[in-house]
Length: 88
Length: 157
Image (cartoon, rainbow over all chains, first blue to last red):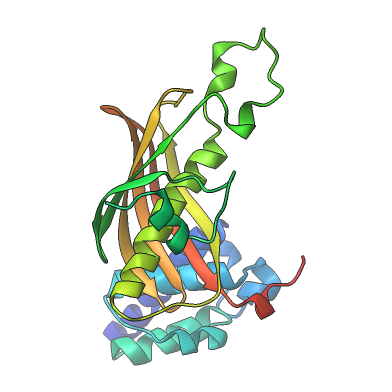
C-alpha cells in the first residue's frame, strides 16, 4: 500500500515538473487542480508541448484527442495513467 | 537536392521572408541539410548608415531561427507528402527552446542548417537543429515546434 502511494506521488511530481518546465513557472505554482489555461496562461501550443514531453519521458502514445481533457495536473495524471497502464 | 523552385512548392513563404535557398540533403522523417546565403542586400540591412559598426551586420537571430525553422518545415511537409499523408492548414512557427548562440553570420556567409525531426503529433512537429557557417557552429536549438492550423481557427489576437 505504501509503495502504491509513493509511486502515485512520484508520478505527480514528475508531471508537475514537466508542466512547470513548459509553462516556465515554478513547480510549486502548479497545484493538483490549478487550471493550465486559466491559472497559468497556457495556450494550445504549450498543451501540445506538455503532451510531447510526457510521451517522450514515459514512451507512451497519447492520442491528440485527449488534449482538451488535460486541463490540470490531476486530469493529466489520470490520462497518462490510463495510457501508460500505471498501477498506482 | 531541392532547388529554390522546389522549395516554393513545399513552403508557403515568399520573398523576402522565404529564408531557405537550397536543400542539400533530405532523409525523409529524419534529417535535412539546407542552406541560406546571407547577402548585404537583405531587407534587414536597409537603412544602416555608412558608419554602422561591423557588428551591426550580424544576421538577426530572429531571422536565423526562422530560417532554421523553415528548413525543418520543408523536412516535415516533404516527408508527409512522400508518405501520402497530406497535411492542410497554415504553417506556423510555434516555439523555439534552448537556443544557444556560439557565433554570428555576416553578408557573404552561407548558413547551413541541419535539422532533425523528433516527433510528429497530428498537426504538430517537434524538431531540433544546428546552424553552421563553414566549420563553425553558430547556433543550436534544442526544440523547435512547428504547427499547422486551419485558417478558421486563426483569429486576430
